[in-house]
Length: 124
Image (cartoon, rainbow, N blue to C red; front, side):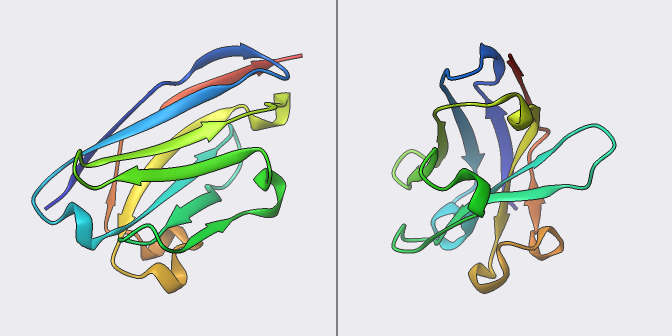
């Protein structure tokens, strides 16, 4: 069992930065690949980034490459999403998830656990 709690969302102007955090409980955290997804009102949940259990492999959706960076600290049971050069189109609820299937970590049904989400609002 893994419980996830996101934090760090908020209101920021376009061009600004935010760092999202995801705190995980459970002794098996280091065995899971972790991912970040987002969901805007009226839209489907959208893949943002994922990282393998040991941090050696990362995937990013094209629209965040060069702007967002995923990282993790297995000693602290934490996952982070550093978001730079934010755009109004990045406004959404951001969720972190845990999956044992890194190869399909771009696909939200592959995830075993989800956090409750944190709201990010980017103003123009």
